[in-house]
Length: 458
Image (tube, rainbow, N blue to C red; front, side, top):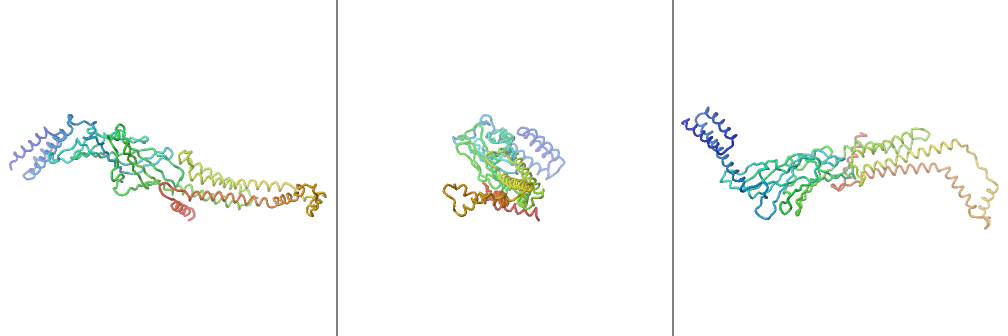
């Protein structure tokens, strides 16, 4: 085969590329020419044919781009429609992972990507004519929706729409853009069931200028995906997504995704609930400590202060909210009342014992008039002139003697029952909490409590 003929074909390809391709592509062909000179025979022929085919494809795409983006027939700010029907923007969210949920600031951070699809009637062509089925262009060269996040907090996600992203256009005019990054949105926290709570966090998509009659946002048939392509699962130490919901408004350019996040309560069960359960047990068993020993008061004050510290820690990890009291806060509040009853009981009991010790006791001598009055009351010889108040003297004295003899014991029993009631209410608060995403968390709470007891006692 004549090598000069092959060289002439290569030069012709390069010359043709100079008129139809960019400078970078021409440099690529010229580099390939120097490599092919060192080859021989059939290898050079095959290589030349491939270069010619590549040159033809590039030339066709260049011609296609020139036709599609001709300023006389295309403008990036003109709505891509040929009728009065609105442009339908199909949204698909792909979740990467939950980066975090700041409960104090109500900031929900999520990693993922948003896929937008719509049809541009002005960007379609015959693939047989150009031998090109799809092209990739910049978002600044075509019409793109002015979409943004309606509830973002300090995030650059969709800050300038999707104009800086690359778009793939197929021969039918369907445009696909994928915008990926880290987004942070505002999430209204509800601490009622903390730490067995669920939070509903929403991602709101909206359009700045276009109305619903011009552009409409909808979700695709598969609106939420995972990066792996399987079911939506997240690897986060605190939160897990238990469900989601998508809503697109027909008469407003708005659409949102609502995620239901369930808190994994095992961490707080070990760090907060476990020690507090033991402290509640100490509150009950502290009534068995003898009153003549000073350790009872010290034990009560220690338990009381420990619950106060735990309550302060709860206030540090949950947002400030006056509309709802967290479940764990209620638990500590009843526990504090129970320990306070034990402390008050110890102080009052010690005061009564000290007063009896310092006061000398002596038998009370019955006056003759009192004895006579009591005798007449017993025999019913009191006349009408004698008031009933005098007849009830003995009854009041009996009640006073009864209180002196059994009053302290009654006081001890009432204080013990009151403290036991407060602790029981505190435990009842734990096992009766409900969730907005899960019908009932009693099973999960019971499991966490079993793991907690296993951790501390086994």
